[in-house]
Length: 359
Image 1 (cartoon, rainbow, N blue to C red):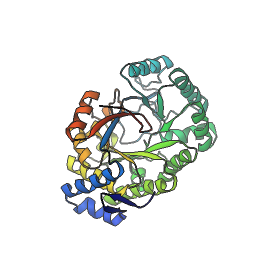
Image 2 (tube, rainbow, N blue to C red):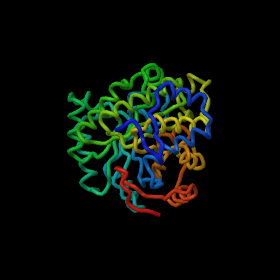
Image 3 (tube, helix red, strand yellow):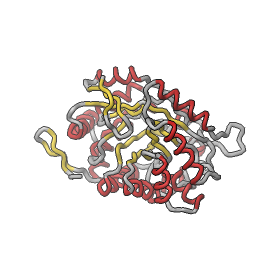
Image 4 (cartoon, rainbow, N blue to C red):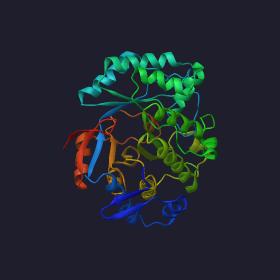
């Protein structure tokens, strides 16, 4: 993608890491919003803000990785550990279809005993029974572990799951793409290079993905920018990321807050500041989502003035951040109202960001 954007007679130049750092630390919040909106409108001059009707389905909560920031995972022998049956998954999808849903965000813990055949059968079952539903599924670490467990390559895992109906891969598991941070908060997780490799391979196979970032743990501003630089560089090469989604660490019930009680809850100002700089810095990302799930509906709406052009999911079901204390909810009608209130046109979209219906 060109490194300059034209917007109503002005040129928006790509910013450097140092410029991004200065904006994070010294930028006026109102000015950041104006500048991020300029980039947003350069990419989306039609002033449409989209959302998707979907459901998060966590097929298992069993995980051996034990990330310190996660309150959702369980071990195999825990009383409340589970793997959903096909019937349970089917019921969840049928309920989603009843409200006009088009996508499932499908991921779980990293189960120590499940190999490629399990995932092939599962994806094939869903895709065959519900061909109208897009499967946006499996994090990079799930893909990596399936490869390890099955003694095959990442490419083969992706090829086989794609052949069975996997449509898109979420950016989960990125957290902060910096090895110091990852070693501290999730030492068993894949490296940042491995995360990039999974997404690069998916892009090479023609599969689109999203990129995410969770901030507010122990990272520095410089490490946040390193994260952005890694995904911007890959996007320059492949163009395979559909969107960037950023949210703040939810600390309740997590091991990380026990080890680092000094970690403070991230403010709305901090969220909007980082969102705006991300929109300016990630000039090759077509879409930026608002994280109303962790920020609430008001700041979720404010995010539309700080570079976001998508409200994300109506979130019929969400279990992971809820386990860590975030329980915000939003219905489709409320999303439509919030979008109209900022002067944008609401649109229901699918996983590929194709507009399906305007309101």
